[in-house]
Image 1: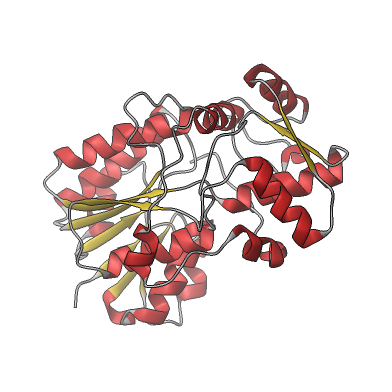
Image 2: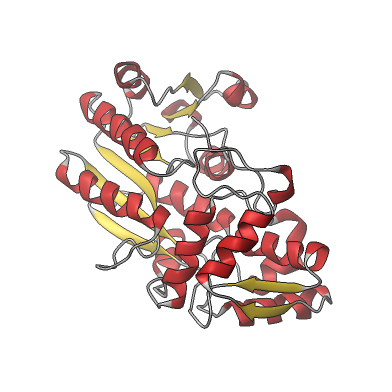
Length: 313
């Protein structure tokens, strides 16, 4: 039985992937890491070995990763040179520690030749770096989290007179639940797949207008979609305290948008341009089940908001 090391078990996706692994994999063959000792505290009685992973310390990471056959690396929440450097240190350490296979959570659009989106660019760079290393890999290109747009929908009826305005236009996105992305992550770790890229998509591709229409049918609200320009999108985020990059913390007024505006605006632009419309059945083939639909997500809306995100290291 191979030893699986799951990083980031104190995070949103990582904790859900850890829960799936706990259900399906022998606990003595699991290693969970968190950024702090307290972050792994809830696993102390599970029989799983826990370790603290400092992604600023490559030498220390070699010891943390030693003994693992497969390592899961959830993409870092900060963006740009800091994320690339941290993930490079993690991968280099894994190779030095003798890890045989990497599972990495990337993003839809990373396979587009001319993609130019602030957050996606990091994944394009890191995917290329992974392929250069002496390690097998499974890259999971996740569609946009449905939860991110649930929070935008809530913000619309709570704060903006039931108007959801963004720059996605008529672009298509197969919105996927973060729960499904986490389950796919665990399934990939437990699988024998090597040297492949899977697209983790939701149940169907749709425009943001259709997404809102489904949400209205389920919730009884009457949110309306308005397309705005990239410049108008920036102005809205500026007005509620969303920073342009992940170098700064988010203002309390921006709690429904725990991302940076350079990321969200360029992501919306890529959707509008049709660069993120990939739709496959890779999720079902990997996991043996269908992904949650947008209707199902809104039926259980209280458990599908985006939650917090930490932009610092």
